[in-house]
Length: 363
Image (tube, rainbow, N blue to C red; front, top):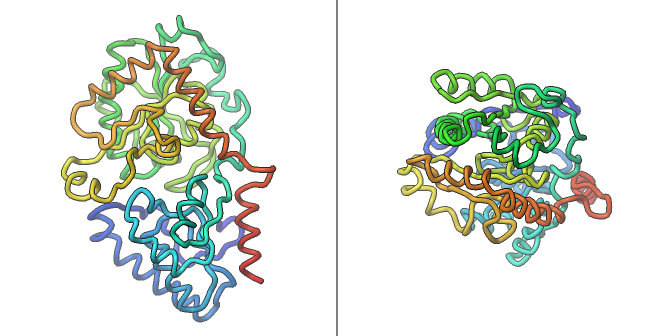
């Protein structure tokens, strides 16, 4: 946004937090940011306020905007259909237009008297990169070639991509259990090759620290463009997904990027048991937590959420999929059908639809 010409009041990249850490360590920072926003709304009010995604801070920003009689176009609807549904009243009061990125969300919010508009998913505004865009994954080098290598090759050297997350806390929570899972897979497939994708060089160094005492070698690929804690480029990521026979991923938006290439995956979300039983499970209202399973309304890909304890059940499921090409093909076909509605409709991008709504609110 700064590169596009935005004047930054604050830069919260890297300050994402959950559970007690959000309450104890980050509250002072966000109170300061809110004061800066109030001052800006008073001295140089914008034509439209566009909160994006996370409801914890953005609903408060929307409330401040409405106090100053500023129109609010909320982009990427907060997933209150999955947790904290009581926030619907705040959306109804403080948001003029809620731009939804998942197909079922428009009906969900409209049924609850929120002015919602399905705009499409921004990830699908840009098509997956062309074949072989990452030269490091071409040819026969360490990880094999881009072309499918058949069941015989899979038996000898399966290829597994891992996505431990894009934020510091996510990687710390997921790398160790993922390494334990990979070690079990390595016991069944001694020549298996593993690649981890990091969104930035900083996160790559964090992954390397986890690998220091690991007995399972993992190659690290860094996404090709900087995107902060939650960003990174897509070309290396897409190439790695396409290279893999199976992806082991943290729950989140990454599952959609993997599904976009119809790639079988196993999804985990590592959380300490006490956090799950004391906090998280009381907020979750959906049958599934992996986003692709939520969209499907059934389990397409195996999910182990919450994940804590032994890595064996996850490893066994990965090995089962690697040993069963028909099962992987079935998952691929279901994912292909699932993502069709997420592609741009009538050639109009999600960004275009949001921009048109912002322009309408400015009139």
